[in-house]
Image (cartoon, rainbow, N blue to C red):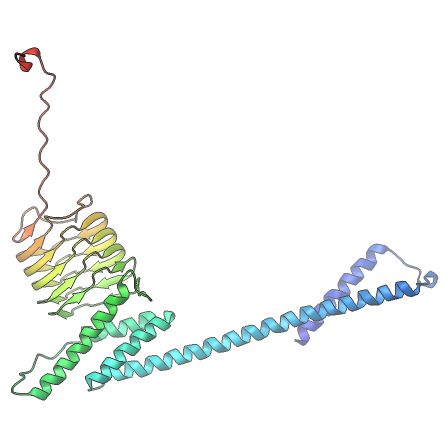
Amino acid sequence: MAVALVLAASAAVGLIALALSQLGAVNLASVRPTTTEVLEIVKIALAVVAGVGGVVALVVAYRKQRISEAGESREQAKLFNERFATAAGRLGDDSPAVRLASVHALAALADDWEGGRQMCVDVLCACLRMPSAPEPDAVADPAAHTSWRGMREVRLTIWRLIAAHLKADASIPWHGADLDFTGVTIDHTVNFAGAVLPSGVVRFSGAKFLGGLIRFDQAEFSGGSVLFGGAEFSGGGVYFYSARFCGGMVGFDRARFSGGTVGFGKAEFSAGVVGFGGAKFCGGTVRFDAVADWSHPPADLPANAPGLVLPPSPAAPLPDPGPLSGADIGPP
């Protein structure tokens, strides 16, 4: 504050000196100011002092605001980090109920903490990538089976929370977040219907689709990347009904289709890149026969492969018969 006051006073004195220098030399001995002139001089001096004081007050208020905002930012960051540490630490609890509460806490933190959203999402995705134990016999070990079902519910909840935040009408969307589902095993229903993927990377690389349903109905792939590279489709179904491929990249490179169904009914392929480089079609069904828009078809699709159903080729146009002659017209 003292520095600001000195600077403001120096500026005022400098301005007054500059003004006086423009008037030239003044013989003070010959000057006899009247009472009115003295009062005017006093008023000007007070106005200058008030202006300097106003500048100082503004500088002080600004500095206080910056210090206050910096302090609030540090406190908020500290609070977010404490919430993250608490929620993440409980994900390893033996109780499914505690883990479930931790999952919801992390999702809520991702909503509140935009700067740490990706970190929260990374932890949730990591939980899905962890191998799950096989289902124990409900008769031989009912307690273990109950615990297994609880842990499965935790995983299903994570899928539901992520899918809900990808929808176009999500109250706090996670659009653009990177989602790493590399190597996950899916034998249940995951509903990504209505998802909007304008950016970011969603990885299903090396995932195993053993059963259940993965639905991308009416999803919009307008940017970013969705990668199914090396994934194995051996059961269940993955459906892109009425999905719009209008940008970005969707890759099925080196994927293996040995069972189940992958359907693209009424899908629109209008832009972007959809690729099947090195994919193997050895069973199951991959259907493109009912697409709504085939103006920008997927790349690297074989012309013929087991289970692959492509759109019907447009009928060949009839040859132009040329101009009609009178003999061609026939009798009236």
